Amino acid sequence: MISESERRGETMEYCCVMMGDEVLGDYVTAALELAGIRCVREKPEEASVICCTEEGVPSVPEECGVVVLYRRARYTRTPAYAALSETHRCRALERPFLLEELIRAVLELMDSGERSFDAAAKEEEPVVLHREELSVQWGGQSIRLTEREFRLLEILCEKSGSTVSREVILHDAWDGLESRGNAVDVYIGYLRRKLEPVFGKGGILAVRGAGYVLNPEGKTIRIR
Image (cartoon, rainbow, N blue to C red; front, top):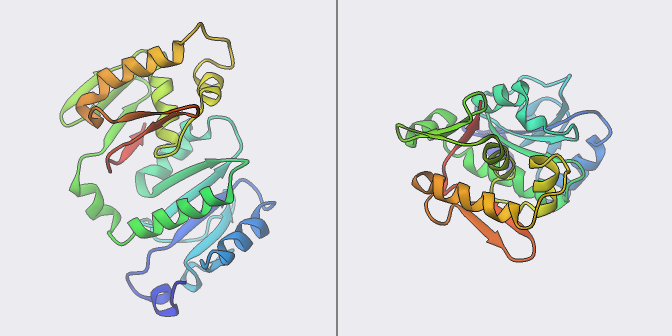
């Protein structure tokens, strides 16, 4: 349980849960309250987490973490999300989502908030994905990808740290079209080899019977 002093302390970090509409408001607030995380719909100075819609985002510190609950396909590839992730630590959960996922995302952002956004950014150069160039830049190098490889990497990055099923990969990277044989495994292999300098040999892990998970090794990932 978060203490009142922590909520109101000068170094307190807030987390904003952003929804597309008001429907989820009561549901999200109740779930987080049960987990011991105090929530409000506005006035971030009165709680650890605020819940809002895209149309009514209250004034919160730029360094606060933001969990975006989205239902529009590929929301995380829009300019709006790219701009948001430039100034905030972000997590995106596609609706429907598990309560455990929401609670974990909020807690992770609040924990990471112990360091300021600027300080965290200076610790290590972020990994930047450039859509127009179909490239990954990190450590002074630029790695070119094919369109399919880039789309696959985007999907893994959007759910970084969580397992992405083959079905989700096929739906997003192959637009729901049937792929031949082990196409997903083949492209995962391509990405592993190309991105080993960035994420290491264990950067993309296979979860038997479930799918794949990106292990960014603590690196910040930005998509532009």
